[in-house]
Length: 149
Image (cartoon, rainbow, N blue to C red; front, side, top):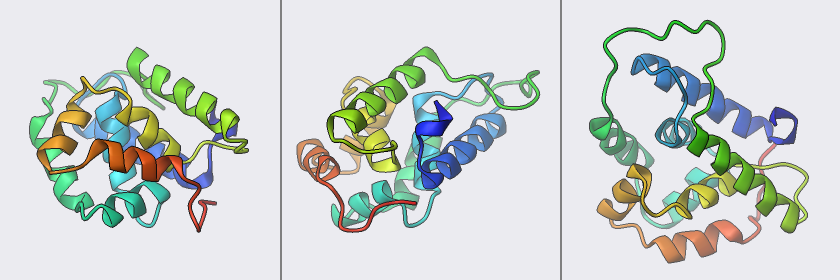
C-alpha cells in the first residue's frame, strides 16, 4: 500500500501514527489520518481546506477535543495497524487515483475518500466548522495546479 503514496501522504501517515500513539490508541483510525493530514503543511488537502476558508489548526483542535485518550500506551512496537475503516478509506483513495489516472494517492485523494464517509467524526467536525462538503469534495476531485511530491 505504501508504494502507491506520495511522499507528502507518507509524512501525513507518519503524523497519524504519532497522533494515535499520543492518544494511547492501538490502531490508526480515520480521525488519526485526518489529524496527520492537518499537520502536513502545504499538502494538497490543506490547500483545499484553506481555499474553503477553513483553518487546519482549528479543525485539528476540534477533532482532538472529540477523541478519547486510552489509559495505557499501545503495546505494539513499530507502526500501529490501520482500523478496518481506515483501510477501507485507503482502498477507496486507491480506486479514485486509478480512475483519475494518478500514479499515487495524495492527501487530496485521501481527504476526498474520508469525506465520502458522512457518518464519521471527521465529517461531523468538518460540518461543525462550516465546511460545505459538496463544494470541498468537488474541489478535491479536481486536479490541483500544484501536485504533491
